[in-house]
Image 1 (tube, rainbow, N blue to C red):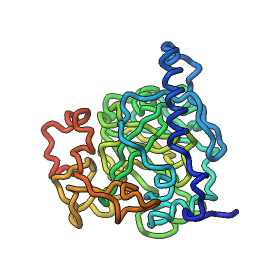
Image 2 (cartoon, rainbow, N blue to C red):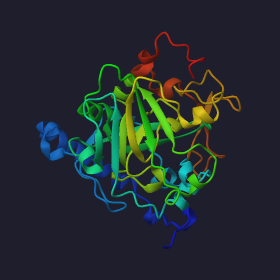
Image 3 (cartoon, rainbow, N blue to C red):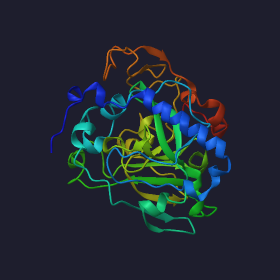
Length: 326
């Protein structure tokens, strides 16, 4: 299989923002004109298996930022996914042969409904929403990404968690044959992350299954990943195969590997420096206007508390010292 490097991709093959947002405006007009369609069975999520396939029935979300999204090529060729390598371009190069379907997710722990579910059954009862979110990486860079996903709260409710389910624990697929980065010892595999139940139920939290109106690319966490936009990117675990409702706080992979640097909460906080760099400013990828992966030329900007989502989420941490609970 021919794997092209980012430099080999012609501008004409990059998703056009103008074309995408024209489609999005048509979709917005059609959805709101229909009104009652928002809750109709016709909008149940369907996920085509073909790579790059267009997703249908997407509903625009009120939670989207009005900031300009990064180009598709930036989002899909400059990212972290250590299961496919530790370099920013490794996931693009090494995930091309990964086959994310068929896929199943096992749900266990403190819930009335548990078991193993095909991805199609897992997402089918839900509506796909477009969420244009800022995503902040702990290494002081950021992007704006038009995700397509499902509010995690609506998925959680169908499993009827018990009252002692205080946290959710998520786990990535462990398959070194298909994920070459797992053959090394950069982290303890499989990758694990967790949220409090309140964080998981917050309306900003989603399971993403696409971006730019298309099926989620392999290198971005296909076929399903978590997005928690007010936290650092390492909390948004990819290629999820296990979800556990638990009474005990899970220890995430980075928390286990370097607890002095990466805590459970991982809220974007410009007032608390990472031990090896400041969190006060960030570089918006692509803002230099000089093409792909322009991180070193990217303009610096002030980092916002909770990544700019403080008005929506600050109440979740009332009474919590965010310098100690980092």
